[in-house]
Image (cartoon, rainbow, N blue to C red; front, side, top):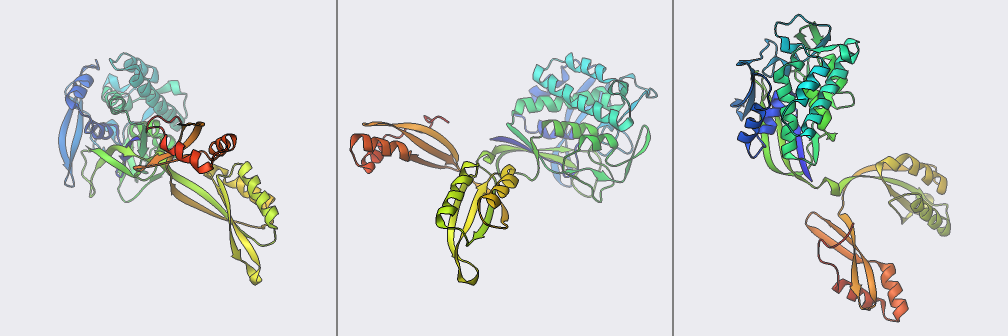
Length: 420
């Protein structure tokens, strides 16, 4: 599966995300030409090489009428990109008119851009999320939100740029690391705010975040909105074969590398995951009763049920019963084990697993078709004729089971011919 992993060890801001994704693109010049030809008045993007703690990467310099936004407390370049992309209702005190945009105005700007409709739809959704988060933070209707830096043309360039870069990269899944949000306070147009700022905290509800020794706002509302919009999951980097890596660099200097990293590659996540084992010891059920209980648990949705003989307390013969199920089945399946058996308790083991992706096909034999089960992954292919079909044909034609099975194996469909 084509997977994009975004590492946010120093938070996330729009310009840094854009720079990291830019480094993954094959035709970087065409991307910049498109972005600079969108029709955003006076906006110009320039990819500037940079380093942070010895790591080379790119800073995406976005200027409006030749000026790049900067704020003294900003940690990632222009103000909206690190700690100042906050809205406030009814705020009109800024010197530049393009800093005073309502959600409706931003939507109109995005709709007028020469970008694919899918890209513009993503960009509008990102801004909608920011507007809702800001409205909640300030206790006002969404329509009353007036953006400062978030509504600026350079911020629109960041948001649409990230959406367009992802459109070009076409990852099937985006995974994001736990997000470092920083600590302490940050000064913005309304005064001093705690970190993470209220709007950022609203956007990151349900997302794994952490603070630390770094003082300042590391994750901005723009960065939070982009990550939560595109991420399929948050967690550690999956096992992947990396094709390209990108580094987006901020302008402020810290003791650790001030960057967002993006990794694009192939994962086999569809062929591994987690499984739950429910285990108990049973020494007071007859073999028939235990066999019935095992069959019932399979009927009720268990992935597998098996028993292993053992010696229990006081030398009594018994069995260890193991029931495998999916994570979401754990509670109900545990209840069923208690109901269907005589055990008074059970153990739960949550395990990682690797498994081959199943498929199905059909093999032609001289006695008729036989269904075939496939399993592929990790460079391995397993196939097996369906027992019931082989047995049925053997009975119907009065031939040995092994003869039908051998013929089915000989006529297995070529790879890629199976149906799923």
